[in-house]
Image (cartoon, rainbow, N blue to C red; front, side, top):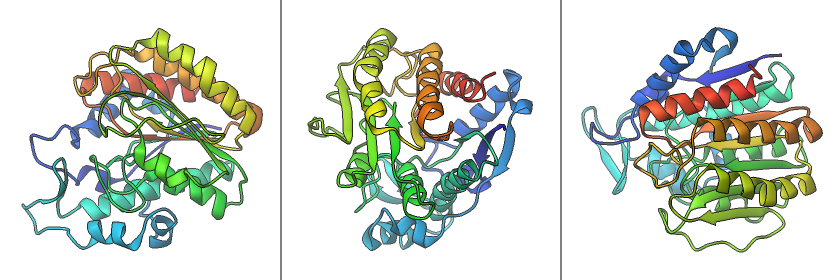
Length: 308
C-alpha cells in the first residue's frame, strides 16, 4: 500500500492578505519540494472533498460554524475574526475542504486503500476551539477527523500527536473530556496562545519547552513522555498535527529543530502505529512559515511515512 497526499483546490483560494505568513504559497512550496526531492511520483495524489456539516458539528458548536459561514465577505474584502485570522470569500469553502480532506484520508486509511496519508491542507486547525476559530485556524481538522474515526468508523482509541511550535489549545479543549483520545505534544512556552500549562492526565501529555530548545531536547521528551503514554493507550490510529514552525529557520517560532528531527519523530510514531493500529496514520499540515524550511521538513516527514 502507498502513502497518499490529500489536498483540495479550495485550500489555495483562502488567503488573508499579502502580509500574512499563512499563505497559499505554503502549499505550492510543499508541492514543488516533493517534486524536487523525487518523492512526488512515488506517492498517491488524491483530491479531498468538502466535509459534511455533520462532520464539523461533531467538534464545533453552531456558533463556531456560524462565525465562519455567515461572515464570508464579498470579493476583494476581508472579515477579521481576530487580529490575525481573517476570512475572504473562499474561506468557508477552504475550511470545509481542509476538514473534509482529513476525513476522506481517515476513511481511506481505515478501509485499507492506502497505508497512511499526509494532508496538505489549509487553513490549519489546532487553535480552533469548539466554540470559536482563532490563530489562523477556522475548524479543527485533526479533531474532526479523530472524532469521525471514533464515532462513525467505530474505532475505540486514537491518539493525536502535535509537534507544532505553538500549543494546540483548540485540540486540547476538543479532546479534554474524551477518554478515547490521547493527545501528546510539545510546544514553546511561554508563547502564543499563552495558554496555562496543563496538568498531565491519562489522556493529555502536552510538554512545554523553552525557546531555543533543539532536537536533542525534543527527542528526549518523546522518549520520556510521549512514547510511554502512547504505549499505555495502544492507539488504533494516530493523527498528527504536523506543524513545522519549530524549525530553526522559522522566525515565527524560536526553537531549533531540523529536518532529521521531523523524520525521527515520524519513525517513532510509525513504530507505535504498526504495533497497535495496523500502521494507520493521518497527518495534517498545521504551521510552518519559512517556505524553504517548511517544504524540506514536509518532504522529510512524508519520506518517512512512505518509508522511502
